[in-house]
Image (cartoon, rainbow, N blue to C red; front, top):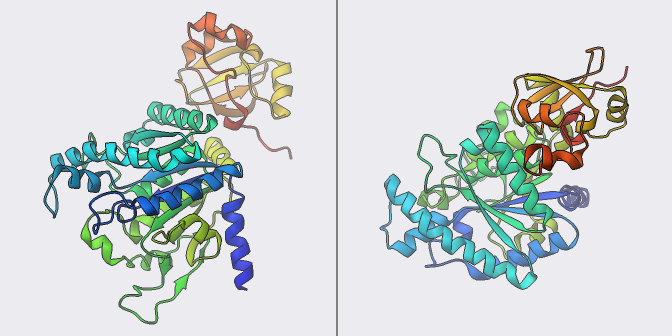
Length: 386
């Protein structure tokens, strides 16, 4: 039985194409130290290099900027004012990015710093820009290091914890696996510090009221206020991941080489979705978005779409409606029958300029190099044949 669970855990992680590792403040900047936990970070860097060596894409969502900035600026212990938190974040981001760059440089891995706010995942244009940037960085072999932009975020517009930020990034980028490295090895039926009969939960397939009731398990270090998350926010993150078709795991990150330790079968809690990121995204496009317009396509384009191809401008004969880049649109044939829907890579005005033209003509027609496809196959949904 233990072997079967180990095999299952390895499958969730080793078969993932795109992995996000979330790192808590007490791991990267423990209160017992005056700086970055360099030895631990070096071991994590070796784990990340191993993931990339087997062809997996890796992103990091890292807490710790405020903790490091607090130390650098000599701010007192205890709760900080909003402007002090923002000042600490500004100073700490420099130290945090430098630490990751130093740790990953020996492995010839380039990092890229990304700062996000809640609006970047809620506002469609900013969501698309953030998604495109992250996809471009991953395509170039870099490891994005992501944090909430505490320097400009206020209490009204911030995530408040990097657990949910990591889950939103997983949703945004169609990641397969989110690893929450924390100071606890997963979910328990009750607080194991207070209940000797607390049982560890190793696998969750659905967030039920009973599961939510277990969220009172918080480590003693959470009380030190260096991290703002707890088990409640981890379950919120799990809910986002399950809806996005992404596996999520809560694991104790304090051991050296925490990813290798996890793969070796360390205690943890896995949350498993019923779908894949690709299918979850297709379902979202098919049912959750209201079309803002329509693209009329010729017969050749309609046949190509049914073969799984992207919709190119050359196959579009007309565009109607009022839509912007990233909005959902219907795809209709010459008789105005709906044959699918998808997310347009162009606004209505730009779509009108390039429809009927070859993709190679787009730079001349628009004055900039746009996307080759009007709707990429990954952003396209066709009804199932009955």
